[in-house]
Amino acid sequence: MKIVIAMDSFKGSMSSMEAGKAAKDGINRCCHADIIVKPLADGGEGTTEALVEGLGGKFVSAEVTGPLGDKTTAEYGILEDGKTAVMEMAQACGITLVKRDKLEPLRATTKGMGEMILDAADRGCREFIIGIGGSATTDGGAGMLQALGYEITDETGCSVRPGIQDLGRIASISGCNVPKVLQECHFSIACDVKNPLCGENGAVSVFGPQKGVREKEIQIFDRWMQNFAEKTKEFTGKDCQMAEGAGAAGGLGFAFISYLENAELKSGIDIMLDAVRLEQEIKDADIVITGEGCLDAQTAMGKAPSGAARLAKKYGAKVLAFAGSVTKDAGACNDAGIDAFFPIVRGVTTLDEAMRTEKAKENLALTVEQVFRAMQTK
Image (cartoon, rainbow, N blue to C red; front, side, top):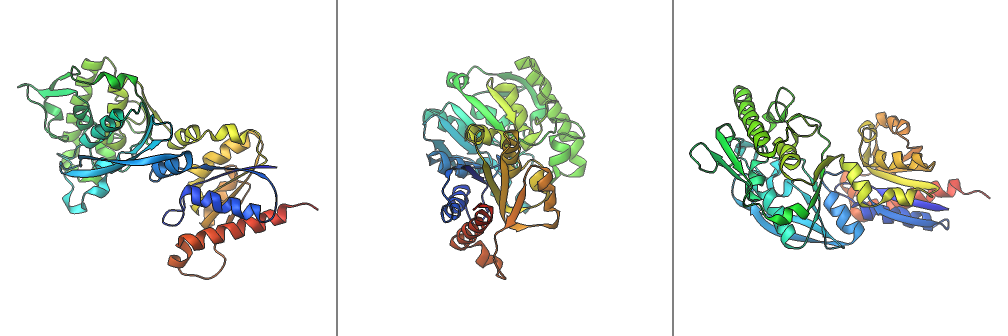
């Protein structure tokens, strides 16, 4: 019997690989099987950790420009091949780096994202997996582009200032100073947002208010963004403003697909499944085990466990899921390909106690063991 384990992290409790190894331990207590443990995430928070831990890699750090221009330390991963960098843009320009009462959409910049990319390229990386959720920015990715060497200037020939404040004054764009090494790089951008760059469903209108954009500023800022899109089309010859995901991370998605030749926006879970080569292992698996901290209706709507279940059903494998907690609407997971799911908490306990890493690993291993004992035939 072949069993493939691909667990998402139990946030605040177990990493993806810790959960996977605990499940494997539970199986080994009661039966013999060929067990493969793979990391799993959905392209958002925790993806870097899962890939570095699960595929063999290391964490590195770089001093970059934070969202409001101050210096911050951004951490990212380089996988074992030495060529693949795994990043989360929130490390450089995330909204968690700014206090709620200090949000400044006019000047919040993605410059640090570009600096992270150059740092990794200098270390020899040519493949990039980048999650772009949780930004504090609405600059269309202009800050990142400037860090990468693009010259974005106003009618006087001066470089535009950080943020969205000067996007309406852009007169010309040049790529003369962009390092040639970027032509060798491929960028897989984890993006589950479908919004275009501009308009009522665009970056400013939909996501701007949570980043400090006031109601009276939305139409003004959107016009500035539209000007950036038009100048980009003049420079690149491509019109990507209506592309699905162009409005992600305040327009950072737009910058990636407009300016970087080998960049593509993809579902976060699809990027993850490709990176860990999960499908190759599942092809001949009898059982697939997945799970996450809380199993609910949202799990069935494209989160990591449902992605694993989708692959498993493609090859006819049974899917079992385990979770720290299970909500009343979790039955939607059965429709998403999970044959059965099980909560792992074994008695009345405090949340703090249940989330202790060693306790969570023990509970998961014991629950998996009992499920597999029930499945054994005489």
